Image 1: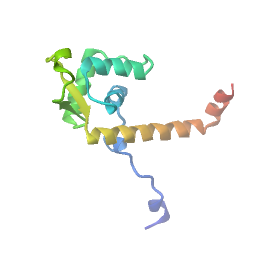
Image 2 (image 1 turned 135 degrees about the horizontal axis):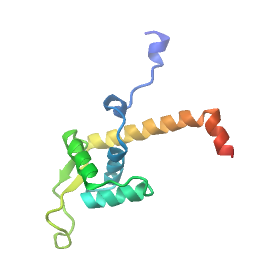
Image 3 (image 1 turned 90 degrees about the vertical axis):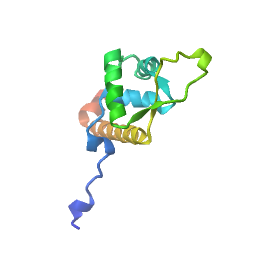
Length: 128
């Protein structure tokens, strides 16, 4: 095995499937701490993004549909206190594959930020 072959970086899972969209990334983040229904996901995404990402119903449920198909999330049968919950709500949870995709994307973003921070332009902006 040549030197170049040994030093190739390994691909992140998210690179194999492509970078996650901001909506998918934030939905996975919202579900990382526990099961949530759609409206609760929308609220958590807005909170975690500092209001920068606001998911409308079409974006949310389109992403949820794709994420269910891709086995990143699954519908949860568990429900909070039935007397305090609307039985029409669907709850979602992160799957193991979804957790791996989230971790891989977080690593990919960290690596991208590290590359950008190593540039003179970014260092110059940080000093200002």
